[in-house]
Amino acid sequence: MPVLSRLPFHLLLIALAVVVQPCAVAMAADLTVEPRIYVNTEYNDNVEETKNGKGDTVATVKPGVSIKYDHSRVNLDLSYDFEFKKYLGQVKDDEENHYLKSSLDVEALKDLFFIEVKDNYSKVYENAARGDLPDGDTSTGTTDRNDFSFKPYFQIPVQDRTKLKVGGEFKDIWYSEEGNIDKRIYSLFADMDHELTDVWSLTVGAGYDQHEMRFEDGGFRRYSTTFGTKYTYAEGSYIKAELSPTYTDFNDDSATDKTYYPYLLGITHAFTENLIGTASSEMKFTEDPKSSDTLNTFIQRVGIENKYERGTIEFSLAYNEYEQTDSTVKTAYWRPKIGGTHNLTERLDLNYSAYTDLHTSPDDEKYIFALAGLRYSLSESASLGISYRFKHSDKPGSDDDYVSNTIGANFSWRY
Image (cartoon, rainbow, N blue to C red; front, side, top):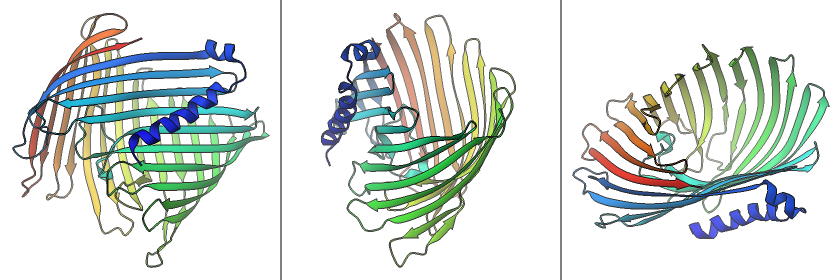
């Protein structure tokens, strides 16, 4: 389905839910609309991201708007940006990109029945094993993804410290590129949360998910149970554990049904009010644009974040492993990462981010990404900036190695 036939439809549903509220005066009082615009010109010496690729100058115009409505039992939070990229040398085709993040929460029956609607539209890597797409990256090797979900549920207070949540969810996942697999997921769930004390809570639950492909064969059903606990041992410090035994029943008779054990074990420790350390081990399912199945994802991560008088700095080290259902294809790599901001002066800020993917297999790619920028505030609403982006892909024995350097200047304004 074309991009422009999806976005307005979903935006219309969300806007309509607000417009039909009975008190227009109250709505106007609680409605906030903030327009913005971002203009950027950059030179990239390898926009194709190939060995000996061509360079080009890219002009970008990106208008956007944020809409918030918070009144009584209705809460709307919407952010939308339209991005137009002009490749002046026509090394690549011009781009029109959309970015949407929206949520609508409705308390349909006071303290009992709730409805959550979410609609998110963004770019993701076609290769899901690359992880999340970082801010400032280009569109090579990516696809547009639209996640729309509708989630009605009952929240029943069983006791003062016990709540039962029962409901269902419909999720539609769409990709823009040919060869990607669109999906629809129908879910039922029942979760019970119980506070043993003010600092210790327990969670138990059960769920059913039916995954259907829009146009391809495949699909499966998942039956899961969840057992979890969270213990807060000091202010800003807690331990969290969760286990979800899951049985997957594939529609394809030739596929072997599987039992998995997704889990989460993590600790967050506040050394001080501004110094936070984290450590976690997790197994979860990740949506794969190129497969009717999900990827089994294992992430081991440690990190530390420090907020100081003039900025923040964060460092993390993660070990990521992705495997297909049959476990015959695996991708594993280490990812050290650093990022932060620093106020050089009252008006001048420095931001930076860098990471590298170090694959455990000597035959796999080594990837480096780095981004740095300076931003000068002209006023409370307008600013000027310059940026530099570096990308390097190195795969032993391959002719696909490349290096890309990008320098740009930008202007931004928001109401």
